[in-house]
Image 1 (tube, rainbow, N blue to C red):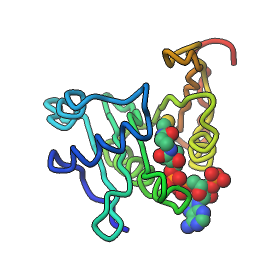
Image 2: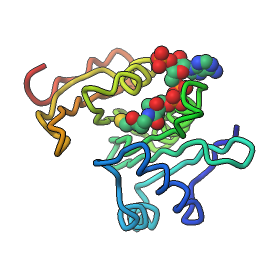
Image 3: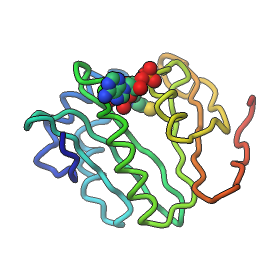
Image 4: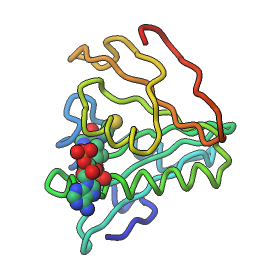
Length: 160
Ligand SMILES: CC(C)(COP(=O)(O)OP(=O)(O)OC[C@H]1O[C@@H](n2cnc3c(N)ncnc32)[C@H](O)[C@@H]1OP(=O)(O)O)[C@@H](O)C(=O)NCCC(=O)NCCS
């Protein structure tokens, strides 16, 4: 498996998987086009390929020393083989290159596999956005990974 930068040429393959994986919450083609255009130079999108087949993709925003994992997805039949871990590693490596002391993300409260992945990488829950995902009404859990030694992430939001 190879992880490389994502380009506009990858867009249609990614959009197809986006709809399979995220259904109600799927990003549009326009959203991806503006993300990949990246006029502010704050984005980093990567793609994993397995024998030339699109296995997954992920995106990071890095602004003012703060990183945000914007998206991560793995082809259903290739999940559970380390693709998600490889993509997240690539994003966190880039966050370090861009001097991000903290990396944040939102994850659906009912997404156990994703939450386990993030916890394995040192993310901890620091807040809840109540009924953030619509129309399902599922909460978003805000997680953060602090790369500064000895730092304890501050709690954000309510109900933790
Ligand atoms: C969440 C997601 C990105 C994780 O990707 P993934 O490729 O399945 O992640 P990994 O394979 O690295 O890790 C998943 C599991 O496989 C296991 N695993 C990793 N490498 C493995 C290997 N070589 N052999 C066997 N198992 C392995 C991990 O231990 C982990 O186990 P767990 O789920 O019991 O904790 C993926 O499930 C996905 O695309 N989900 C749908 C979209 C989504 O929810 N995105 C996140 C939005 S916040």
